[in-house]
Length: 201
Image 1 (cartoon, rainbow, N blue to C red):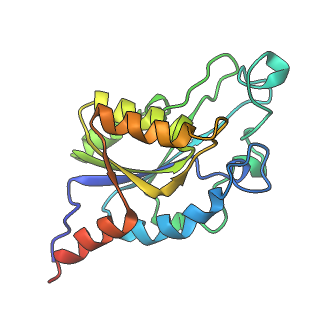
Image 2 (cartoon, one colour; image 1 turned 135 degrees about the horizontal axis):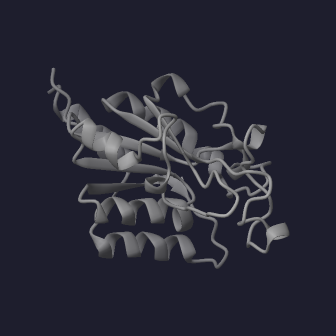
């Protein structure tokens, strides 16, 4: 049976402890996306995880004049992927904002252990369609989706596999609308799984 996702990848944006309940910069219900993401990963031939990997004196932290409390500091539990995330399914890991004086929201600004960019890794696997999940809808997910579109990918934002910070009550909804207006497809995990299942009928 041939996968309907042979030219696709699923991207997990910042599903880290510090962005989940109990973390330093918790997103409300952030951990609730984990079982959804776990159901999606087996359908894809290439699963990519991106995450914040900040030094302790990162420019985005309030102590350095940035907007955020310290979070996802290199080597801490907060920077680790959520423990219930099925890490055995992840094929490649990318880290962003790893130097003190440069911030980054998009996973396309990250690199893997060999210094390869996300775009290079996806193109090496002949990926044309990118399915995006993660935290948070109105920040790193949005930035990643918009960069993916700029880089020529057909992008699917899986709306029930992400959560928003919502500094303002409708920030998440506005982010989804911006993604859609730029060309992203807004889909649910159920739609993705049903699409995958059709291949076996």
